[in-house]
Length: 290
Length: 330
Image (cartoon, rainbow over all chains, first blue to last red; front, side):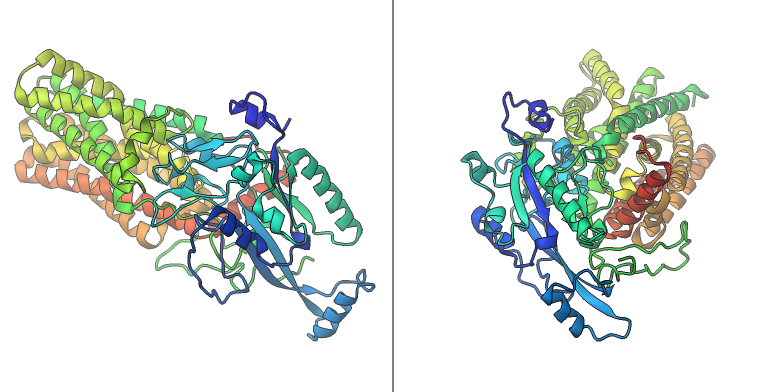
């Protein structure tokens, strides 16, 4: 089933579809993934800024940031029991002195290119620079890209971007070079808590379903998977997530749809408009002789 | 955990409304990541890409006027329109190349043919169309190779409606809310805008005695453009807001005034002479350009504000959970 993506792209005998399962419930926000990605892929420095909004000074994915750790601080109602046996939560409750019994929680999530089943960037790329690998991932060939920027506007997640001093579009390759020799991507390798898990997508989906069931059983009712559903607007993501809040809280679109899903309708309307224009010009000449 | 404070200090912020801005939909609370956009802002340069859309329309509709003028024996109108389409398409190609991050790799556009990429389809279309317009103009100016010139004019006219309208698909086939959500009407807006631009060029540059068809095309094009644009905004939902606020609003108001005024002047031009026709033509050309700039900036504004990405998607999810089944593709 998940091999079909590579097969449809013309790979005769592809390996299983590979991807990421990012379990944000165990992310500690260490940013080792960001560093490992930059190091391995030799990505240039793209600004050392303090945002003032949180511990997140990376701000978002971009041409020179292929892993981005989001950091969200929330006030939440005190948990109604359930965590008493965990010392760290007792300590946190003692610290939360607000009258409403509020607690602070930190959400951390390492974002990455989703390697969509139906990838808008790949669909709209006019040069064939973006292509589907045998692992069903989506990769830019930098020796082909002419920097038209179409992929940037097409991506429903705001991932791919043009590098200003270079002119070409860049994004996560899911470490295509490492995959080729049987190694796991640098970010997954560096992740100290296994928040970033790499493997065959089928296997990751099973693991993720188990993990959500486990979290629900332990009282974390808001745990949900994001991007794992092959029926969603992009046909499911090759890199999907376990989140503890709504996707938009993490800067992710709640219901992304690949723009090319409507492309047939777009061409039909354009054809009708083209016919209208021709008729309009003909009408202009049909009138009086001057 | 329903009472979570969402998205940090800027999550769920309300937009300050501009002067005279009309709320089409009530402000919705929504969560975001510190108010940061979900989408990347289109990186295209406004002048390059709005100029490309405008010149493509001007060229396409001019080819239609040229063919019509040839058939109805209006040689001066034909020459103006042929020179207009060849010049406009040359400039539009220059704008396209200028906007590339790697202009030297322009020819990579013709490396593959991809029906899923409107830019690829458009590149091939222009690769066929541009030489035809140049051949048509060259044959007309030289006064030789009349049969080849007529064939080039007719072939260019056959491709012209596609040249003038495919640019709507080009910008609508993106994740940019104010472009994508208008994909049904945008081609008609662009068709009308192309007609008014080409008619404007003909009115401004051709002798008034032969511009009857251009005057009628101007009026019909203005009606199509203004009507389709209103329909588009009405059907678009939340993303229509960007067309009515800030910089896009200014451009689009100017577009409306110039196009309507230009069409009106064009309708009267046969009685008022050359100056009136030149004025009408200039207004129509400027109106079409302003429309493209307004549409461009509205799209950019909709990508820069997470509201236009998150709120409609949330509503879609809510509607789906009410009906219990996924929506069909439009």
